Length: 117
Image 1 (cartoon, rainbow, N blue to C red):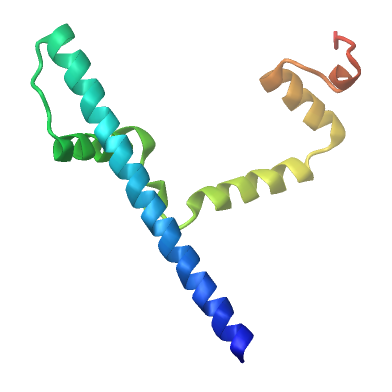
Image 2 (image 1 turned 90 degrees about the horizontal axis):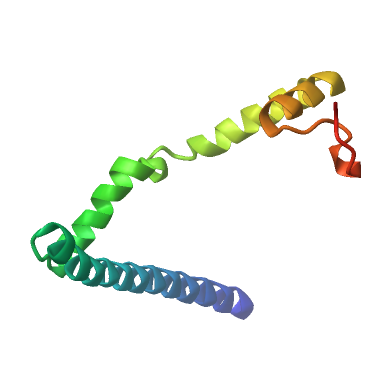
């Protein structure tokens, strides 16, 4: 019983430490964006200075625009990888070689250092 309690306490402590590390990372990254923006943009483009919270909002906006909302979809990316893996495994060796040649520019004998073709 005692080891179970210790295990739970360690798990909670580890979770709190991870959350704290993420918060610190986001804070430092937002500060770095603010400093870089305020150093570059007003000088180069005559843009405005921004504050810390504006830098954090800029990070969130860039994540939404360029990175999507992958974390909110509930693991869709894993499903796509799984589907591609199933498709790949269902191909014959000849079909795999043709796809490697088409997309990677290398054939089935590229591992040995020979050119294919």
